Length: 255
Ligand code: MN
Image 1 (spheres, rainbow, N blue to C red):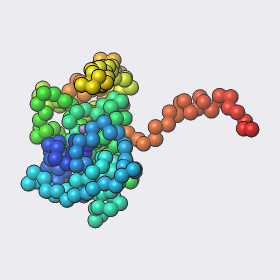
Image 2 (image 1 turned 90 degrees about the vertical axis):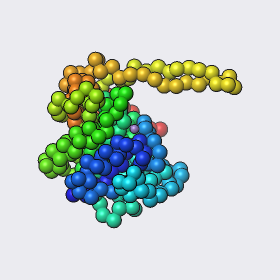
Image 3 (image 1 turned 180 degrees about the vertical axis):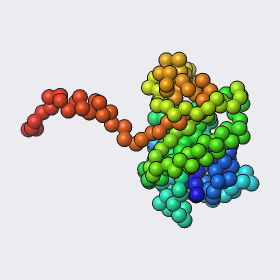
Image 4 (image 1 turned 60 degrees about the vertical axis):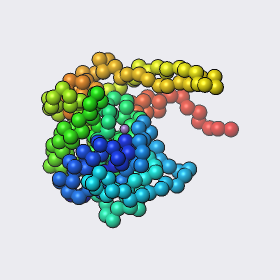
């Protein structure tokens, strides 16, 4: 079992070290990760600039490729250029911060996993709910248990799983729940300030209202202290809407 590991917090992030420790106990692991933080970068890729790639020894723990690009770039580069052989599983994380609800859309961590799935490899994103003191050691042990369970189930080619680990400062998770993404949007606002030259500057802030989420959703289960597992797919088509718009009156000919 060979792993490829990436993340969006950068190759030096403690969450990546924890995921490396969890995975490398189960098989060899290659690390290809962004050189710096790429949070909320989504499934962006670099097309306007080339990317610098450096071989880096991190933390006395592993040698990895540090990439001046996005998480999805890292997986693409790894698959097409860097790795001597294709991995059996792509892992991304452990992200500092949950990726539940619509955060899935913004998440670089999940994009790293989804890119692996697009190559037909099973892929898993791991994210840890925020609290004042993130315990990546404990989260890594939870990730390892979950990873072992997923591998034992022989995940199909191209499956993409998002795993959220509840904050660890309230004790161990109460269990695992497989659940759907909550569809509630952020309650957002901008902090408006004025810079020294008199220009307005805006800083986005907000919260995800878990209390408005469906009780069977990832947001609710995570808030209740469960590890959540949500399968994701790249096809964003709204099938019900597709069926509905097909009966709308569309023009028959143009010009
Ligand atoms: Mn991140």
